[in-house]
Amino acid sequence: MSLEQVLSHVDSCCDTYVAQLREFVRIPSISAGADGDAAAAIGRAADFLVADFQRLELQAEKIQVTPDTNPLVLARPSTLSPQRPTVLIYGHYDVQGVDNPRSAWSYDPFAADLEDDFLLGRGASDDKGQLMTHLKALDAFRALGEPLPIDPIFLIEGEEECGSRALGRFLATGGLDPFAPLACAVVSDSSMYGPDRPSLTLGLRGIVYTEVAVRTLRQDVHSGLFGGIVHNPNHLLVRALASLFSAEGGIAVPGFYDDVREPSARERESYASLPVDADEYRRTLGVETLIGEPGYSLLEQRWIRPTLEINHLNGGSPRTVIPATAAAAISCRLVPDQDPARIEAALQECIRARLPADIEAEFGKAHASPPYYLDIDHPLVTPTLRAIRTGFDIDPVLTREGGSIPIVTDIVDRTGAPVLLVGFGQVTDNWHGPNERFSLRDYHRGIRTSAALFHELGQTA
Image (cartoon, rainbow, N blue to C red; front, side, top):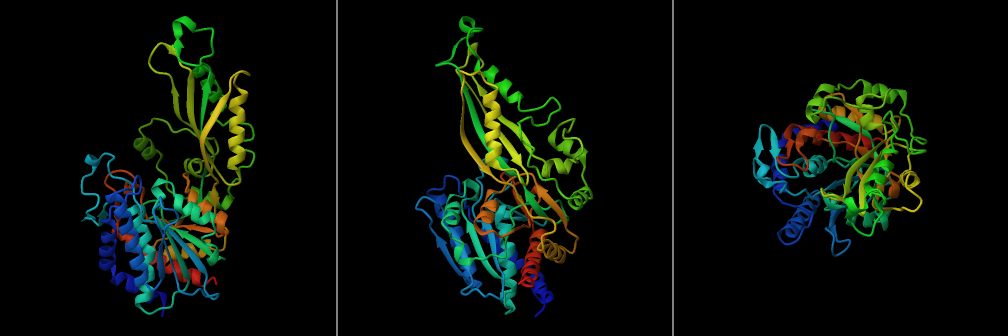
């Protein structure tokens, strides 16, 4: 049986696949602070997936990693064949809350209504719709009695929106070891470059986040009585933070750029070919001027260059006092070959070096994740692009993302498998905000792409 027959079956089942996705979206599986009705909804969403996987002849189970975490859903064939590549497919069934505020929604976030070729609802795009593209692709192979070209291992979590505690522990304790070696992992939890611009995302920036506090006094004091004879922590912290940047706007932390890997000429040419509307960026952001490093395009600055941002400042209050403490939150976005631990240490040392000898900087609440990069010349890039082209009937583009998806690097660290980031959402889908939606046309084309990708990966065994 040919791939064309599988794709034809997908085309003929669009209404059924949409109905099944609507049923899934109607489950209000909000993970943050899930208890009572919310916890019950989490359970229903996991049960929905288990039932669907079992209907597709996969062994499926809920895994309760710890009593206080939401269950994982793991599905796999009854036997794995050495003649077929084993492919991990990751997604999440939990969704963000809707009280942000609830009055901002134009419709019921869990009614899963249809309007203008969009499915409306929380989780429609992030990530239930994108996840379901892979289940429905598998459905098409099963419906035609076609042997699966791959051995799919579905690992679906219920805490992506609140920290991935269960999944992190599952991976750390070797939960995927029985399925090694993995040929690759597929993650569809991101956006395309734009409408009718499907893409393969080659990389994600990493992150280092830390909070710093400078204390100079036991308590706040009167600025009229004590100003001029004691250190003001606001002054000290602001000067230290300012020293992290050069006069030209670059990052002045010693060694910050030392390990930055420059992209290949081929990759930069690919990004240069993408349409970019700088005026639209300015309008959307409400700014007159876009800043950046000389020699790098707008997209390159967002994707392939590291950054350092001061995210929050806190010191005292609008009163005439000298505060005892000043604090700041700082984050760095990292690119390939930058080591989060090394960058965090350099950042802390740079701040400490700018403070008086008798004043200590206290660092706390830190987290870090390394960058991810799939080389443009990796052997899976071409078949993945071919699959996207088959699914959309449009030539795909190569992109990177400026943000971080920590679970991607966790998968790489634990399995050594390359991760294919093939998203079907749009930046206009309103993830995490009111009025989330998902294009039914992209849902259909995403299912076609997934079926074609399973076929392409099967040829690599």
